[in-house]
Amino acid sequence: MDLITKCIALGMAAAAAAGLAINGVRGSLPQSPSQIMNTSQVDPATGLTFRTTPPEREDRLILSDAEWKKKLTPEQYKILRNHGTEPAFCGVNLESKGEGAYHCVGCDLPLFNATEKFDSGSGWPSYTSPYNKDNLWYRLDMSYGMRRIEVLCARCDGHLGHVFEDGPPPTGLRYCINGTILKFKPKEKAAS
Image (cartoon, rainbow, N blue to C red):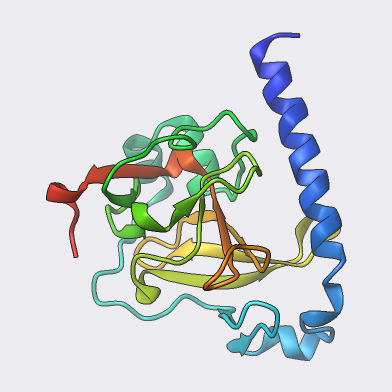
């Protein structure tokens, strides 16, 4: 079996396992369309507020589709702009270590501090909390027959991954993020 086939198989297995865990907590998320249509609502499982529209920001980055395609690699574009997912155990930054922060490749906003990274065994870089709570926003994701909380960059609205309530203490959260859309900056270069 070649590397790409292995990555796809591992990714499908990880997604199936995540789906089973997600389906086990279905009742904790909003059930009616009117609840979902609200501008924002607190998810009782994670305690996070998910929204239907992005937060207002003075530093919002808005680019045309052509500009995004020029700025990003095809894989980054697929994930960040089209809500794709890299295969499990195959993305960059999965095993990277060091002091610093992980930034969005689309807009350079710091998203996660390296000290919050942990090995979840899921095949994607995982973090217990964001660099700054205002650097992320959340949206209810009902795709693939599952209910998940999507994590997006607050500056460029790029898709980052999802957050689950099966992380370690103290937050109990697992930010499961596509490593391909993260850029690691060592501590001396990390922005605040």
